[in-house]
Length: 398
Image 1 (tube, one colour):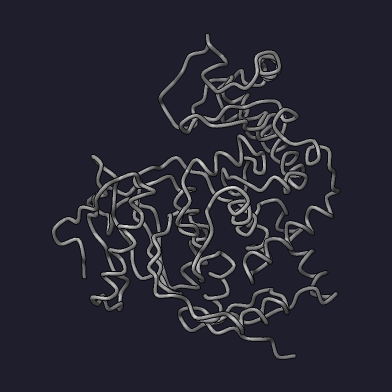
Image 2: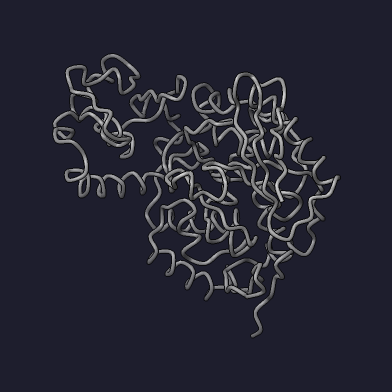
């Protein structure tokens, strides 16, 4: 049988629509509306870099312009409709997904027990009971509250003191949960004090969890290879993903399609009949320019972003300044269904300092597009907490 074909523009639009970036985002960006955004995305990556706004805040703001950072903290710390754990990285995840994370807890614990003895400072395993007992007796604690007599080190990001390592181990293995954050510092508590009983007590077997993880990933991507689907939540293994795709294909739950790439090639991917029907009925995107986080879920798979959008993007934090083509931390900029460039901007002294914008090769930066970009930069002032945008001389490159 001839496989269905999605041309590159249609594939981009379907992909962006599943990431809530195709249509205008309306809603208050808090409470139940924010729960809905989080569910639609599957998770939002949490990152500490804060040159303009923290990654998770910019991700949510780009979908809901009324969003403000306190709203996400309220979901986790007050309403308990979301929890913090890991997908491919630290993330805030809808609370209803918690039962499926039990498989990840168990697998993470096994990996940590195998790898951490050689990768972490000695003594953390001996601190597990003491840390757990301290939290049981005294309530939620951060890394400063445990291991008071232990030597602290500033020799590296991951050079934790033993009790800090114990805290992270207990959290990653599901024995503790993040109760709240103060600033960006995590406070951990016993899981049964944080996770609502209805979610804490629910159990799923491995097959059910793998089936959910793969189905949910495909629903949020629109199409993908078995490896891309496995990497979405990072719960199913590559072998489990391949087996799931083979069975789902054989039973007609999914089908194979040819997806058009930005370079004119094609890539075979799995999708569903519903996704193909939805793709054929998508509206044209608006002309709004959107400022994206470098960790936006639509771009976190850098290779996929390059194939689908023709957008090669790397964060050049560890590249010497003389060798950087752009700033070390630049923001991708989306307009309609294409990435139009990257922006070097930083919040400083009550202003948003715009140092440079590099249009993508071959893109014409006319007056209308430049005005749309300036409008977006003025729009983001409320999130960044600044009063004005300061454009450096020669900021518009190319």
